[in-house]
Length: 201
Image 1 (tube, rainbow, N blue to C red):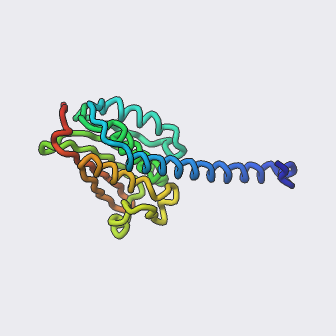
Image 2: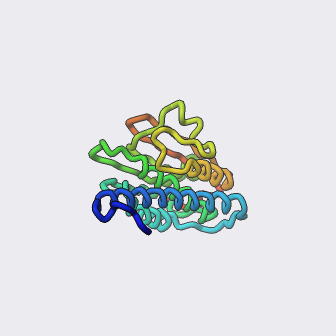
Image 3: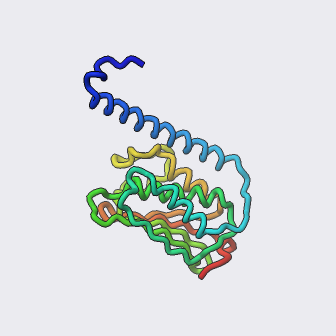
């Protein structure tokens, strides 16, 4: 590939390569979201006992290498250790919510934190992902689960992640809700029917 002038200006070449890398990452993210969306539409539920401690540990380890993950403390409060559900779909939900919490962390805050918790709550299973990131404006909260909806601060994603997450939760006969304040943080809560919550501490 002949790129005129780059031999004389290495800084310009570096900038060009960074733009290419960013574009490729966005395309890769979009393709993975489309695959998740398609898989969620087609695949039947494969119910089994899920080891939540291992699943969440694996998800945290997988996301530690994201660009914006550096300096974020990720806490785990696993009070329900096992769950009867579709493991791939639970993994998709955890991965999407954790990825979002990392991407939209607040770079201005000295102590950036994410907490993942599981527990039984009034006979139901509860999964929460809480962060002290940028937060979501009240007028945007009613739209964040819509396909391709993006806010002014959500240009790091594809507009599919939360839509896929909501559809996945619905496939599991559960509900997802959000509680967020701009500048303070966001908590996503997943509630699954009580027959899914089989083990807790």
